Image (cartoon, rainbow, N blue to C red; front, side):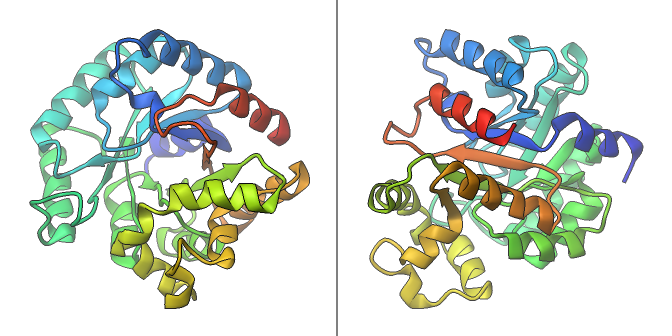
Length: 291
């Protein structure tokens, strides 16, 4: 890994925020997104990760509203954006704001991409095209879950941004990636102490992913059973993928990823708002909790 990839670790720090709302193109939300990005920077978060199939254009308003915040896509689906388009967007934002954008790439899911074929080969070809267009390997990261893609993240990118994983997966990923690559798993937080309320909010979010084999196959490899996947997910499954409870418990759950080898944790705060909401008060509470 190059020195600039090493600097990426230092730049994004220990914590970031993952949010679908931050990628919104609703003109009525543009001002609030800029304000929210500026506040995330002030709160000490090192990165903002744009959820959904996001692109460079979604990152620009956040970059323009801040001075140090790293903004990354988490993820840009290789099926939704041609490599040439991605490379052109990267070059434009890099020229205007050097070092502020990270291209997070992923293969999405067969259910969500009609052209989904031979995803690993397609990802390799996409990286080849980015290389040819001059996008540096150390300015892109991969949403890697399985061993082969994790190896690719270590050799063809700055590292990995796995989604919906456990500290055990993080430890395995670190071993595959090696010590130098960036490892920045996503983790969900519910700022709620009541078990029933917390799990109900978690299951509302988890429902989408229970229908996506890329995730459920990984969970089965990690020791969960088919029964854990039924009826919205077992309490065991929910309590593994969502941190809830008092401040000490949530802090401990987040730190478990660092102890397992993560450099950075992308925190997704789950609330009773819509998926596109900007839960700014919850982000403030979380920043205070982690301080």
